[in-house]
Image (cartoon, one colour):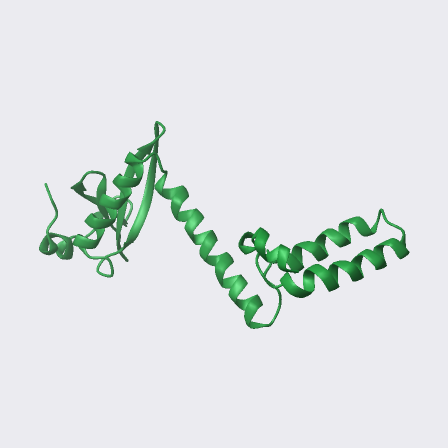
Length: 169
């Protein structure tokens, strides 16, 4: 049976007289979506199977996430499963990508090079080969790389550099 707003608002956890504690109550909406009701909160969760293993994912707290929003999120989650994507892994990947983007923005705001810029990668490579080269060779190559490569293209992320950009210098 599908949940209603009135039913959700009236939901309360069960009190266990023997232990003197409240017990978690799960109200199912269907298709793996349910509301967990505790003494302190009401949270939307969804249960699904990926590659034969049961998994659960939180969709947010009620009333911040409404019944309709929870159903919509569950629908999107089911679409990901149909495409062979694990929603939990997709969420983790997206969070990691967002954190990396924020860190890059902070670096750029400070005036530092993008972590995957040609400058950062070239200087990192130079530090790696420094141990194997003579000091005179290292200093000469470093000057040439800084002048001819890092100077004109150093601030660009490597993924954005095209062969035509290199031919210009």
